Length: 334
Image (cartoon, rainbow, N blue to C red):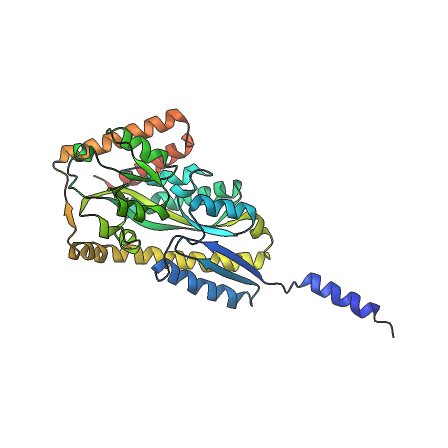
């Protein structure tokens, strides 16, 4: 009996039901042991089980794969398949995601949720257009200004060495408006910069500052939510297209569920993080006056105007954010 029909059938079955396992290598600056890594380790186990081993996630935490630019370059070269980034870190390839973080844009999580429910899908589609498949956009909380000297007024920032995310045009314009020339660094370089005195002022959520140990290098927090931060886990589109559609669906479902749990943990843990900072001797200071808060808002509006003029972000996206905010505020009342 000829073996040819059997071998042909075996080959067809292998083509119809691939048994290879895709290992997606993903880098992040989140340290091992952080809430993000705990959730992602659990997500990796769930993905492996539900795809019967066809898809595995391998994480490289703590910035061991380099800064954000290096990770993006390695993704393009195929050395990595994905990364976890703040919106500012991928502003160089997709600036519009950064618009959620316009200084003093959102007054509450409710406002941010309302806008994001209507705009996240468009942001994810925009990322796909530049070759990045976003598995989830997650909430990183509100950033607060953290300083060595109390900053109750805009004038108190004179002479401060302020860090901003590398490529963050929005913060650049805002700080320039108050006469400050910020220092652009990647997230992974900030702690060393605080140690050496290259920077002495950062903006971060309380929990993020603790996870990255930045809180050990500051003494004061200006008690006004400066900007709302998001992060996203992206996979290079070329690696994504190699996955079976069923496995793509599982991966999206698992990671989004993990992101939702992280969002809930971020919000529930904010009060505890503030107390933890206070227990370390860090003082929360209020703006000097209500007029001073309004001055901050005016600076933020001027920064947005300049960014519109420069064409860095999509004007239509800014208009849409403002329209949704107006809708929410009108329905909510004063």
